[in-house]
Image 1 (tube, rainbow, N blue to C red):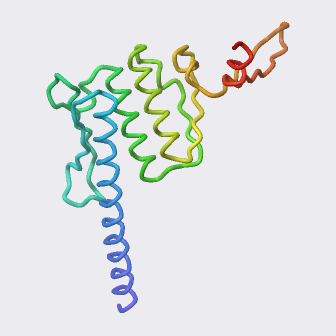
Image 2 (cartoon, rainbow, N blue to C red):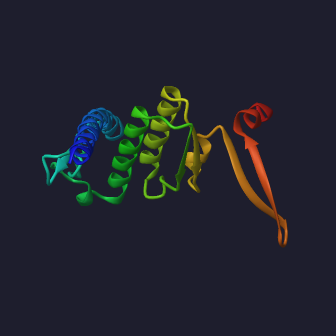
Length: 177
């Protein structure tokens, strides 16, 4: 009986600490998300809301956003490009709380028009200044490629023989100048 009581006390303590840590991280991510959303959209607002439970360990998460000139709504009601920018603001909001050494983003710029790709690249520049993270961007978008430090590609000069090509854009630019 004592062992059972001690077990319940241990679990209660872990749950209490888990709630505290989750709420602290949630508040930090939510603040970063709001700032990055406003930066990406040139205005508006966004926030994360815990829903369906008062216990943060059991709650769901709703993404509320309001791009400039639109009504406050959930993520699912935005256009594809707006959803992408909102998701990027959230991803980078998490990175600012807990940066990783490497981040791979695969075709995240695909649903964006040129103006929004530029905003994405500006945010990426800001993230590289603020964190130690190395970003690996997989893309076919010319605007994104033009903003990178180094490009990697695969070429096939003869049938069936692939070759990896790497170009340092700063060095290439210096050669042309």
